[in-house]
Image (cartoon, rainbow, N blue to C red; front, side, top):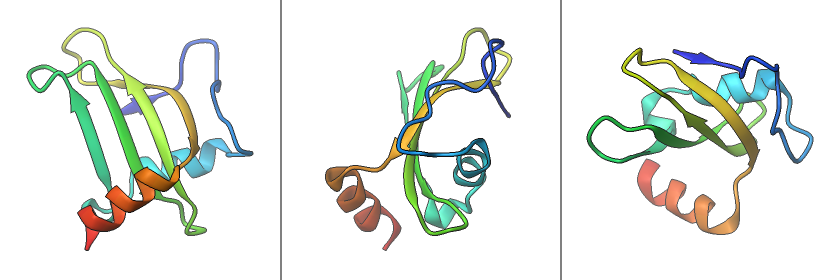
Amino acid sequence: MYRWPTEGVTGLRDGLTPREVIEALHAPGALRMDNRVPSREPTFMVVCAPTDEQRLITVACTRTGGDGVWTIVGARDAGMTERQMWRKHTS
């Protein structure tokens, strides 16, 4: 489950819209690469996935406590290294 911070939608770069962020977070597992740290009870997650418009983006999320809800803290277009890692992960 994902939510925006209590202050509303923040941290979007590169002209991204909230809709694109949600699309990437709910992308099929075969098209999505995520990294969670620490490995046990993670509190930080970065997702790299495409939007419906085939725009590859990265989304950063944090969580506190054990409620399982991730707070979206920022999103931007994926960089070259992220694109290469995503291609390797999804192929």
